[in-house]
Image (cartoon, rainbow, N blue to C red):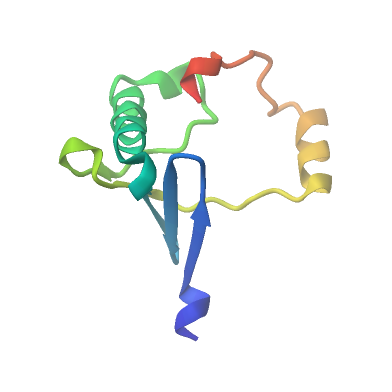
Length: 102
């Protein structure tokens, strides 16, 4: 039962620990500086209000100093069918996000 509550995902610079409805992003040890920088940048983007222009951004609930950890709500990953339906819907954004944003 405990294993069902926690899931671990690995990205190129950070690991994400999903605990129920909360996701915690921490830098990978081998990419510590880049992962911490990514956490700080993601927190800055949210703090500056970029979600007004990019509503698909996930809210940042908190960031520990130096980018040690970033806390966000956990999201549902879409299946391929859900993604196709979303792309055809009116809620799909008609802008192309800045690649530097991600």
